[in-house]
Amino acid sequence: MLEAEVAIVGAGAAGLSLAHRLSRPAPGAGRPSVVLVDAPPGPLRPPRRTWCFWEAGPGPYDAALTTQWERLRIHTPEGRTVEDGIAPLRYKMLRSDDFEALVARDLAGSDDVRRLEATVETVRAAADGAEVRARADDGRPLTVRARWVFDSRPPGSLPAARTTLLQHFHGWFVRTARPVFDPGTVGLMDFRVPQPSHGLAFGYVLPTGRRDALVEYTEFSRAVLPRQDYEAALRHYTEDVLRLGPVHVASTETGVIPMTDARFPRRAAPSVFRIGAAGGATRPSTGYTFSAVQRQTRAVAEALRAGRHPLPPAPHSARSRAMDAVMLRALDSGRVDGAAFFARLFSHVPMERLLRFLDGRTRLHEDLAVGARTPVLPMLRSAAELPFLPRRPFPGPGPGPGP
Image (cartoon, rainbow, N blue to C red; front, top):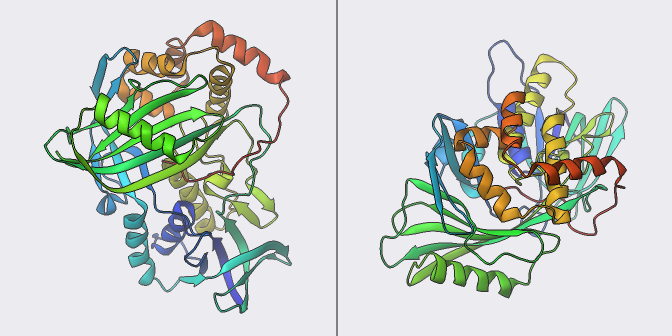
């Protein structure tokens, strides 16, 4: 049996971020002993993915970034281009492999964090803490007893919700025969793609050079598509919309992110907590997760070092969650045209302010100013009916990795 003050289950963005924070020295604060339990290679380990987020100036993971940008571009359904700078913010791209390598190097030099590769079978309350029961690759049973356990594994199903849409996407890492990309600007939402009968669709271009980029096709809708439909959509987008010419596809990326007004419990037992997407870190209106994971794990680490109760804070404010619930209902009901909705927001609100709004960092008067740029009557009708809608389980996947 292994014993530690803290056990972390899962080594995705949330698990690694918390372990990394607890391994770093903090003046005047203690460092708890930590066991990080990671699944062995296979289906239980998170797939490779790309995270995007924004922050002002330098950040703790800049050494692992693929690249960063200071300008965003939107294409409206009519083909109009909206482009703006986001200073002092920077839009950053981080590949999971590079993030894991950076954290692994730091953890290797820490005496306080021990990594354990095993398949977790149960996490349950125990006297003065909790137990993690797992099995090693050779079949040996393993038990970790800890005062506090932080579980970042996605649950098998989503909590009941009034509205649940899926953000599902497929991307190509492409290299073109000629220099066609603007490496200084992100193509955040390109609505010049055919729109589905329910929900919305857009292209997404993350250039890493004049000839290299991640190009994605994304939909917000109730169900995912067959693989061949994503491939066909990407061929149309790269050939007919972007006119990239011949491209070499070096690798691909696929994901599904629930966008839901479900309530994610952050406490599973007196000493067992959920963090990351499992703890509600995914922003319902956008699918972005990484920044909220950093806020949540920072607060947990500070509480542990200070000897306070380490219940993870709600990743998003009650006001943000309420606005997201209204937006999701308006989209799902068809009262607003999704492509026109987002195109209008980016056309009339400064992009720096809109990014802060999407991250829940705007003040009330700024939120009201953003709200005034939405279709007011459909949004008010959606808000009025929300209290009367039942919460129902969603027959789909649990929370996956955010962008």
